[in-house]
Length: 111
Image (cartoon, rainbow, N blue to C red):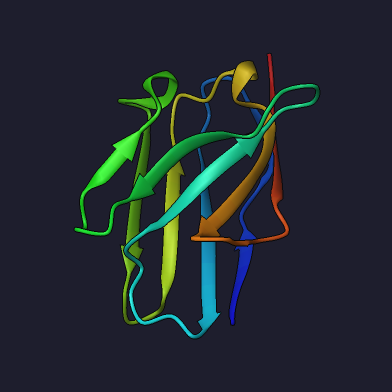
């Protein structure tokens, strides 16, 4: 069993920054294969960024150059640094690993 808890969401003006954190606990030994997804109202959940099983990173085209995913294996925590935020980044952001999901954290970017 794996538990994922997100934090760090909030309200920010366009152009601002936020850092999300996802703390994992339970039967997990590596932050590899963890990722961030988001879901805006009326839209499907989409991949934002993830750490691959090999330790590489993948980003959605819409966030490349603005968002950075990183992690700390010792803390079993994954981060999502979000810079140059846009109103279209507004969504609930979820942390995920395999079939496990966190409860989500709201990110709202005002114009």
